[in-house]
Length: 191
Image (cartoon, rainbow, N blue to C red; front, side, top):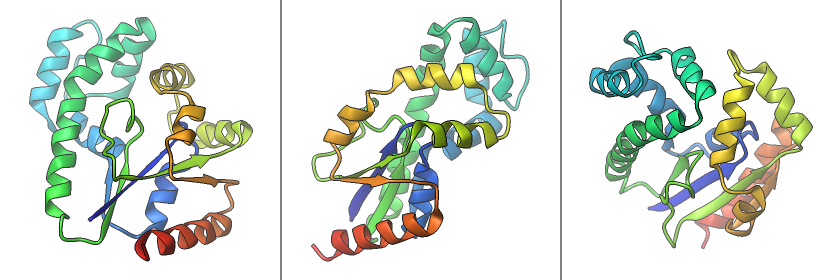
C-alpha cells in the first residue's frame, strides 16, 4: 500500500486535491469534527482543562476558538487531548485499507505530528496567498485569528516543499488541478 500525504498551507486546496485521487482518504479535519461531536470522553477532558470555555456537548467550535483566542497555550492543551485520538483513528484506517493499492492522508499537521514515514509519497499543494485568503473567506464560520494561530503551529511552506516528492501549483481551476493529479497518480502507480 502506498501512503500519499497531501500537505500545504491552510486553505491551499489540500482536501479538494485529495478527493481527486479517488483513493481511500483519511481526512484529519473530518475526524476532529467527529471527535468534537461524538466523544463525551474528549468533552469531559476539555471541560476539565478549559472550564471557562467549554460548556456543552457536542463541543462547539466557537468555544474552542474563544479558548485559543484568549490564550495561545490553550491550543496546545486541545491538541494534546485530541491529536492522540486522531492518530489512533488514522492507524485503524491504515489497517482497514492495507490491501488497497494506495491511500491518501489529508493531515494538516502531517510533519509537525511526525506522522511521516520514509517511503511516504508527499505532495505539496502550493497556492498564491491571495487565492488562499479568498478561499478562507468563503469558508463558513472562518475565524481568521484562529487560522493564524493554527498556521503558526505549522513548519514553513519552504521546508514542506523541500521535503515533498511533488509540488502542485493550485490556481483554483479544478480542470488544471485534475490534469496535474492524473499525471502524478499515473507516475506513482507505474513505479
